[in-house]
Length: 415
Image 1 (tube, rainbow, N blue to C red):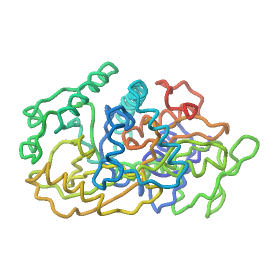
Image 2: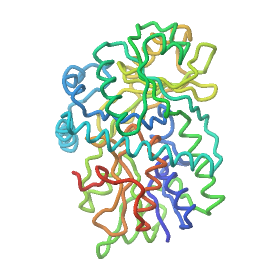
Image 3: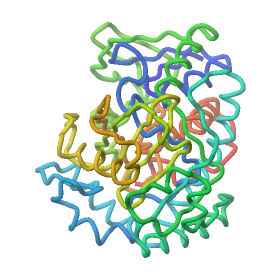
Image 4: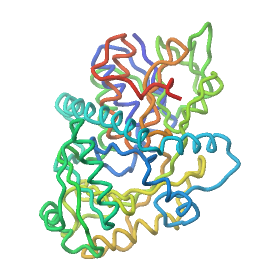
């Protein structure tokens, strides 16, 4: 079968590799000059398989108004006359109840643990190197109430196969000795041993090359998609600025831009861009050896070889990709507060990207009303984490095979 994948980020390329391994002919259409140049390029680097608490939860709801207009808040909403954002926001609020948050946590955890299993296959079968650290992730807390909430979430997730260790300050320092020098007080932490970290850009670039060399996949870079042409309840072709591309099946993996191409087809999905930022510093003697999550500031730290990647915050401002200094500054301040011994000043690089976020948290994976168009999009902050599992699921769906895990909570029909 010939499969045309729309989008060459980590989601699209992972699917291309899995489809190629199953013997399919694959073509990937990507507007940038190479793979993983947008959302996958410089994200936080965490493979947080056990991070299953969605943004929409009871604890975050009271903070939204307080955060709304603060430039240094973890989540910033820029009010705008954008009906799609308004509709997304209403769905987000509806998912902030305890019952909805727990149901979405179960879905995220199911996909996350499945992705860990499939990442093992990717790692062994492809042999790709990507600064992978398999030391777990330590979530640290400086607020007592936040820590208590995290303990409750960890106990809830443990029931579904995600082990976690509740750590006091001394145990946190045992796991990551650099925290002994932390400028902010640490009340405690949650250590998740199944989690990992690694460089998604390196991974995706190497995997794209393997797709081409091993499976003869064709990547059409510098190619802008204009629209999808339909005929008789099917996608007939993809019309681009470089010509028309045809296949037996098509996968929508354009991230935050997916809704823009789906709406003309009568498919409405609540995927909205959540802007995130990252900065990168060179590693030094005081750089943490393991991946950390600072929950108060919603910032993650990942050691990627000789670099330290720090990423976080969420900003809703439409499709604006501009790097705003006032949003980068709080991340840099948080780094200096947590890791004062690193003596970091100006980062060697800054980055902003648009994370394709659904209002409830889980991505959208599965069929559409067009019998040869499939969706693998809306992964939010967890695209790198969920890529391997999502690639396997979409391949099984296209082939008509039973999936290894339930797709409940991942289909477009939930909206």
